[in-house]
Image (cartoon, rainbow over all chains, first blue to last red; front, side, top):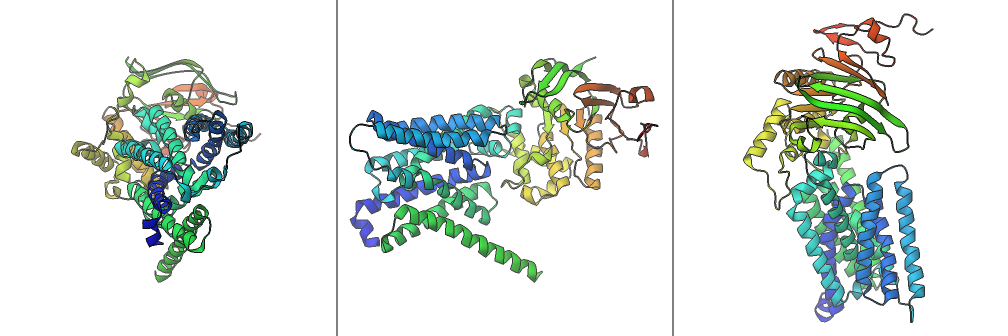
Length: 275
Length: 257
């Protein structure tokens, strides 16, 4: 496979896509899992499918309409989540399905031969185009910059947003910025892993990193590295056995989590027994 | 008299439309030490949160130092109920206290300087948890975590300290330590408002008591007499006076009948 990477651009693109999506998975994954925004993130991702359909209907680059949909959904769902109430999960679920339904209807109404939408749903890391890759890199840089530049403020906000607003920080800005960043992360991951599976790539590496360190910053770095390694292993396996790449990567990430979970559990038990 | 907090005609409704607080008037003079008591669900926490504009209120005005809350934020320390926290969040004690010292105007690549770290250390020393500074919060006991939250509020160097059940689910040594600390802060001039679920023991140093049960049922001297007790349905409380436990409120003679 290593020789093939030098030969085929599609494999080079796949490796680069893994590299950048792993950074996003590591950073945003830790945030959404710690802030308990996993359901919300799933909701945004699925709502964004409406944007894909709209792109085809209007015959413009679906990336643009998808970004608009994802950001809109993030701010909308964010508001619902913030107001809380007993019904926020119901509202998120409705957004979730509404986005999917709109996407299907828009694509049905779109002129011409219906496009292959599987890559949006399940991802296709072997079909990342030059344009996709450029967009991924650009968005990853933006996401990384926003988190790194205001890192200490994010930490305060994520730990206790009430306290953050009480000491006079503008939490409204931080909150909306976070939702936009989550929406952009979904765009980055959508091409590689698809709407349905990207949530696994946000959860598995960060959950694995949580087994290894209690330091917030290290957790983000570990999660990025873990995401990258498991993705490359997944890519290698899929190439060797000729199976769907994105799905193999997702399986690798999750298996890796459970493997570490059990190893850690056994080691802790052994330590306790030793005492 | 100068009032550091002036609440007038405050009314709060929950989202479901239920009334939480009706027409609460509360004036707190500088240097006061107020214990807020009342039945569960009576609106004690709601009162504190509404004062701090953490939840919306439907009527009335709230003033701190004769001005708005947003102009007084640097003088107010708030210690929330610790049950509202995710104790698994990856953060050390020192980092939690440091958050209080951060520059309020968001700037790029913010780093904590020596003064801020010293302030955080001082605050932790005051509550006796400096030795735990580098520990993850999930490894702290209930009492230690509660003191950490107080340290975070103290790092703001507040003139008013608002505490929501600071001794709930706390071991007795931590409880004594927290009460001693609050007494000392009050003597140094800090105005203190403290919600207590703890009807068995409110610190003897509390100067005034407010009983909240949708209305402000009682606000006045911590020495209660029988006449007042009649109005305090649901606000039964035992006070510990001058280190000697004794009942201030006699039990109703017809209780249980």
